[in-house]
Length: 301
Ligand SMILES: [Zn+2]
Image 1 (cartoon, helix red, strand yellow):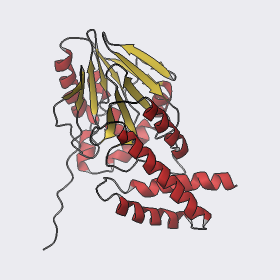
Image 2 (image 1 turned 135 degrees about the vertical axis):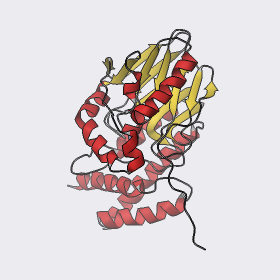
Image 3 (image 1 turned 45 degrees about the vertical axis):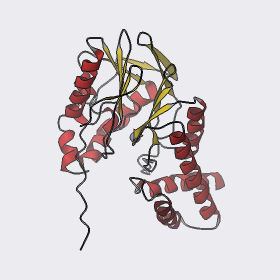
């Protein structure tokens, strides 16, 4: 008897929000590909939404949840980074919500928003359908480095670190509740996503990414909301960092032994799939290996 694989679920936000701390809600991704974990933080004066899901329909679903939880309080929207499944539902928040991005993220959206839309449309009818009618949305405000939002009884710290998973990754830290939204800097039971597409797009840096994760661990969050996958404690970040460090070290070892880039990618694809059989999206292993290989080759020149 042959095994029958279930078809991949459509990239639709279907879950209801779950409260994870006082005033902090997460719409869990349900481990559906191209659905992110979405945050809704409700203070006494305003509510903040973190990521929208992909496309206007998912954006409207998230806005509906946010309005219900906000109970008439004004909405703010911010995104962890420009990638389509995280931010291409922002149009559903206009008019009405105040939208904040960091500057690098805004610039990256301007530079790559349309090419990424075209790329994602090739990912199948389900994805293309959700992207129907997408408009790229400019923020009402941009910031550099750090911005603190006061929601009334709760603050939200927006922080950026420069190039890592993208040019403009942003985390949202709720210091009182010790909740950290990481975007795709951290995934749970899912291989790190390396959008390493040379020569067109090489805006990912594994070494800087590791250093960022060390900084996030130092925040000592009690609840980590990864870009994709289950919530957990700080160990979710540690696992992600140790994976990146292993990928880096193994890549450098193989390269130093004389393996080609293709040989290195193939070997690590094999060994890391075997090491993490229950992790999703193993196709990203090779992209990560190639990214670290290129960094090693640059150093040797
Ligand atoms: Zn991403």
